[in-house]
Image (tube, rainbow, N blue to C red; front, side):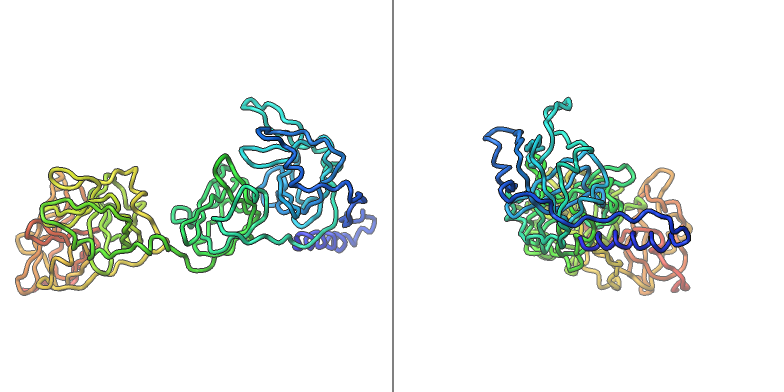
Length: 503
């Protein structure tokens, strides 16, 4: 790599200038930049070496007075490759196991090397081709030994310092086993919703993490990062773009290993093609309800909406309300403390396949399976199969309505009522019965005498608070029970009464 060579040059110059007080110093090390004198007849390609293994043979003793001539495409400078380098010629690539660290000082990306195949074995580790020393039993089976540190210089001989190797541009769907250990660039990729904006690895515990990167057609690849990598604690990018690295494999799972964060350029807009192409509005699915029945969705349809309810204070129980610009729907979930993973304002896709829609005392809801009374809750272990997060979060924007304007189309949406107050019969009472953990219905009224129920769970954190006696605005989720509209608060702070009561 050009920047590595420059770094070495700068170190040498710095040594000269910082040592001018004492002129009796050692000369800085000279970086050799020449190929060894090896006859062309002793050069063999990587693909030819790989072909030496017979069918069913895991390891093969090459033991030839021949040399592979290749360029280093990945080194251990960032810590994402350990005691190994990856080399590639015009025919294939391969990993070399070396029993030493800080190999990048000598065997850096962009340098040509000549691998002497005397005493060298070729084999694989869980499907990945490798070069090393004679295999040994590590207690779990045979594995390739690393080339001893004192034999590395005579086995992996340095050659010319070349330019940064060029990566081939490929599509995920086109990757085959012949691409293992080669440097490629994949364009139009992004970290999937579970992996986006999380650390590359667990730096604190020095544990590797597998993330998923995907293209706009849903083709995916595992991106694996070592917990020892210098960038392990950095956050994965939130955009879409290109990623460059080495194709690897572990058993049947293809893996992608970047060499440094320079290999990732994801600053473009994300794609959600597969989900976006299947979007339907909440209004559309609400129209499919049949009174007294549970209607199943058995297609790949998806809704996209904002989370507008929260169980953080305990006023909502085992349900998540999601709304788009056309309406809202309550989703029954068999989980608590969902506000951690489904925070207010966050945008989610909800896959409908296998879910049922019904009404519970006139309130539209989605659930998991049919039951006698109404649909049941989605098991906690399956929530991620249905809810797919995005990186979007928006401030909750309630719809300002008057009590006389409320209608069925506003159910399960976030609304704001102005010039509202608790009726005199509720004054000096608490929101709910906190002692017995019993829900209480209070009434709100406008200055014209129109009324609506505000219902509060006895388990809510603000159940024991006294309702305010003034007039003002209230924001919450509009629901219904039989024929009575009800409003549910996420927080007691959603009540902002700062005006005098109306007569």
